[in-house]
Image (tube, rainbow, N blue to C red; front, side):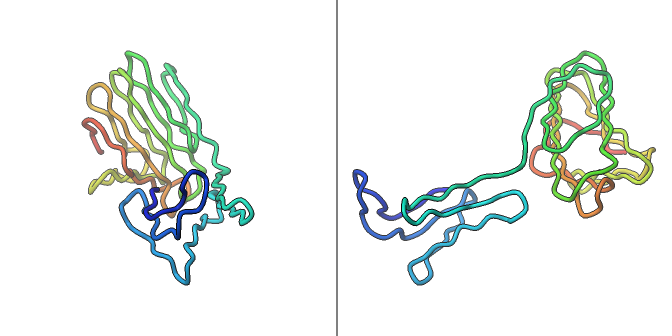
Length: 172
């Protein structure tokens, strides 16, 4: 997030804040001299302190990185899996996840990886959706393929690719 307008001069106030600009370039202008910054109430929180003119932004989401050479793994939410092996890794989707849970698969030199679904699961990548159930899968084709997934509305069943997709993927 960036801001425009004079907001500080050597530690002192320099005039009113005119706008706040988000990462996407969208601008927010004050209403009655105020700009509100709100959290989502679920895991992202914003607390204002009027005596110090500060905002404290926090999250209760735990992020992690797991490097693995295991031949098979089950994804856990908010973990970035960095796969490093010379043989294919079989990836299982969680059977229980909440809408908005995110998962990252990073093929760091790995030959290939394959997401193997259970009976009611499906994965959508772009305009393509896997066959629902255990016959559906997403497989990387070649080295260094990456994928970011989010659990959609149906917990543990529907996963959608958002943002990061790198390399060639086979969608069955």
